[in-house]
Length: 211
Figure 1 (tube, rainbow, N blue to C red):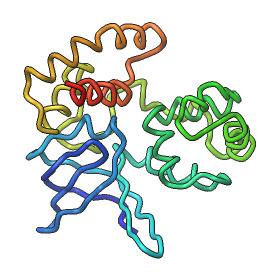
Figure 2: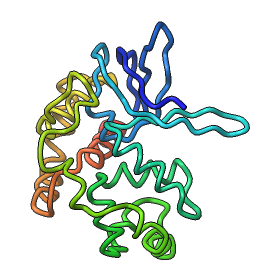
Figure 3: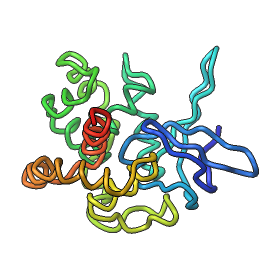
Figure 4: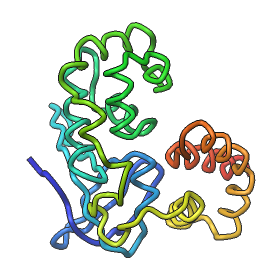
């Protein structure tokens, strides 16, 4: 198993990154939130999980070991594969996933594309006693884990999105245009409990794609 990769970020795309390790470029599938904290040319460390299929080997990357472990644990639930587990973490940080499962918050779980009411109920039933409590997850209470090397402190959402969009090939001016359009959305998210960078990144890409 490849538990982590540490090297220079050679490329960034909407669904992953290429990290050079020992002269080899490894393609790593990441959530938008993780991608937003990567920059081409910078050093980065990602916790990883290798998913082996008959016709493919897919490496999934995460900001820290806790996120990777939750990704693997989610897949122990009936009907949850790696793509759906990654989708859960793209919408909710680990702390929110644990809270939603432990509290039986079906509405929060159903925000994930691909999870309906029955799927959310199944996650709660099968994982409630295995995910731990939100008290054990302090990832949102202090500085983020140093898993991404050069990006130790999490920057404000505008800085994160700008870095991600520029890394994907957009100009600073184009990124600023998208961010300005998303300011009302970010304000609503802040009032509702916190800005969701992953969601904003997807919306920014849709705005820039239309333009």
